[in-house]
Image (cartoon, rainbow, N blue to C red; front, side, top):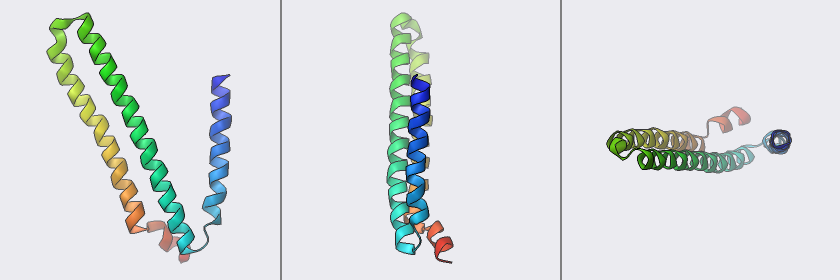
Length: 111
């Protein structure tokens, strides 16, 4: 039931956002659409990275609680994993800033 609900919800969300993308006929409309897309994209990236970091920290705490002698190795692995997860958020920020300030699609739309 949950899988069907998520499929229906994501399909409805994509269909509702597609009309906004096709309605952007002029350059200002495209810039406004790109601005909204970057805001939503960075929000989703930050939320996903936050969830990933929280789950990683939870697993590290549980592992240390079960085996305190392995705490050092778990901590090193945790810090490395958190750095990789945080780099994904930084990559998303870079892509969003490129879209926001370079306007690569606005030039295509206006011709």
